[in-house]
Length: 152
Image 1 (cartoon, rainbow, N blue to C red):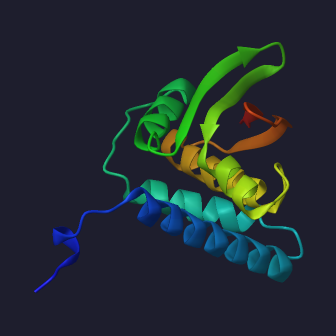
Image 2: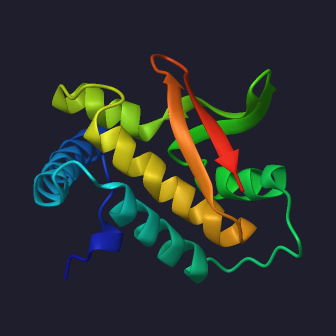
Image 3: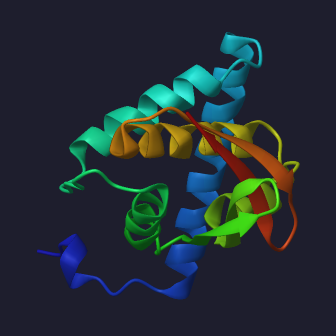
């Protein structure tokens, strides 16, 4: 009997899986965006808060930096991001971003609905772990993206 764990995955298997997941992400994002009329932020936030509740982590009176560090560590398989102080506050800098790669693969605009939904999702995770509302605003995109974080 041949099981999935007996099979060696090839680079081509990974390429095909990435193409399929990218397609599905585009379809989900497009569908949510059409249903919500562009107001996808609440959907992303709710999903992010729900996900954060399921994380096996407890932070006692965390700072924004501690929350970002925790999430960056958990998401390091597809992302490399960190908090950076700026003249206007705190910025989240994305040096490596799986969403950026999905946008490239599908011909989607960086900073468009897929990025917006992801940032709302991440905002929701930060909201839940920090126990304070957080909102991000995409300030720069490209090979390194930057989002300004506002907290209450």
